[in-house]
Length: 154
Image (cartoon, rainbow, N blue to C red):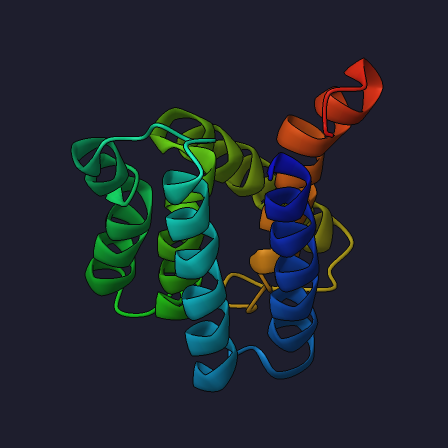
């Protein structure tokens, strides 16, 4: 089931990243389809007892996405609400601590990229930057790469 979850997350993150890069928005239909498939995977893993997560743990797993949603509200949309919805979908897969780690690394990489654009004078203070490609790269670096290197994804 872990392999199914990882493939689901990678494929959907790449789709989200594509739309974020091209259109700077995430289609609602893609969010809904991803949320439904994600919910089915969680239910199946609960039913087959491959994941013994409690209901309370799953609730806590939504905290990073809710936090990003609050940041979006406080910054009046400088951070996209679509990014928060995407993080809400993945929270139960990643867990609260891994989710915050992925979020931190994505923010760090986005910051470095922003500085790079400013130094090269390719961007300015209000340049919109797609965040989801950095979230996808963070997931690959924090979750997938260590599991692949250790041979523990099957």
